[in-house]
Image (tube, rainbow, N blue to C red; front, side, top):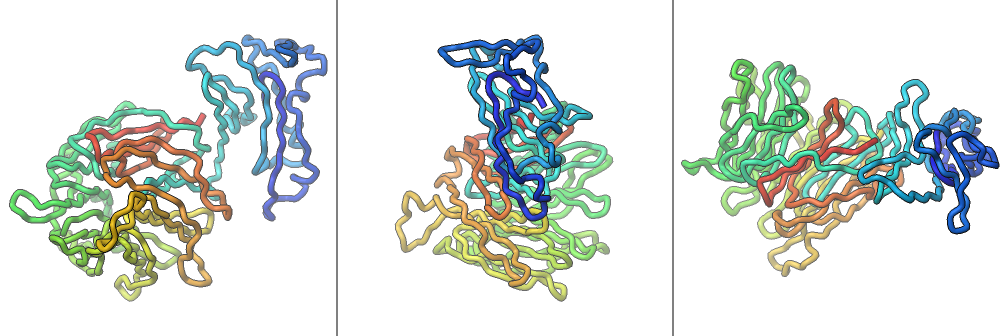
Length: 499
């Protein structure tokens, strides 16, 4: 452990979950970290006592940045567990600091590898706290902006408390982008597919740390892409919202050609203003569900679940489900049971419409539970330990018999938790979200951190321009976010600054 300039005290106020050993957190008192390494007279090489405006402090020599270090076992005398909650109190004066230079005031590093476990870093304008957590079982992060929930950090190899993000790449697209899909092809690389408003969408490949154009694909106001595999076959399905040049509405499944190293058309499926595809597997059988949004002015139509036929090597209609302005499907499993939930957005007169959760029994999906929603646009399922959550992003409140109010787009989205005893999802938490009246409007997205039974707490927000979709991915170089813009032909790749 090393400490930096001036006074530094740690107050380890900690809660003690029952699974932890009580001796670790009995009789906790404030710890004076500087006293562990600095004599009372300050007579240590690389350190001298100074006085500024009546206040005394310690000045460190830039030539000896690691002069104050000691094994953490000195203060973790009863056990090695770090407190869940603690405070660091420090008084710091930085007379001169070169621009864009970061300095660490306090670090805790792994003894064997010098891996940063905890750090307090300062820059000319900000103070940053970093805390590495290898075990992510009890944590989850969500990003939302009123149209989408996405579990961001739970699926990355290493999770760090979010410090801040920095813009990594401006990805210029063929037109405004309504959806994005990040995926990998073994032995080929990392890709992102953009669903573009105009007649051409595209696939980009991660090359030398950035996405570069790889393949253009003709589409018709594409809304979303879905990547999936069946055996060694690799597919990419697009949800087209508008009809083609002949006035026919088709969404298309593309198949990766290992010989041509690109996607080629494989199967066209008749859809109605398709918003989303969901691919999933149940008992070794493969399915695709399409969210049909409307047919003409009629929003109360059937969405369709297709099943892969190994004999014909095609998807065939397997089941229809009545939906109302369907916007999204989400598949998940709980033990041996398979579930499929739909986000219903509009029934023709109101956005106040139930969205439904279905369970697969006896070869088909049957109604399991209904949820009151307001223009539901997205569902996301995620886990924290053994707990299972289901979050819905409500977009807006509207009724043809009511005049639209200015705040109708500021609305609660809801997180539900599975209650195994009740065999139902019960409301866990409301989160206030805002979808701007126009998808072209600028705004901010929010990030919430799961804190166990305390719920999700807002911890970060990011300015965006017409944000419509988010994806998280990681490479050997770090963790990234990419978001699409419905306002301009420009998507942005952000890099998570974690250390």
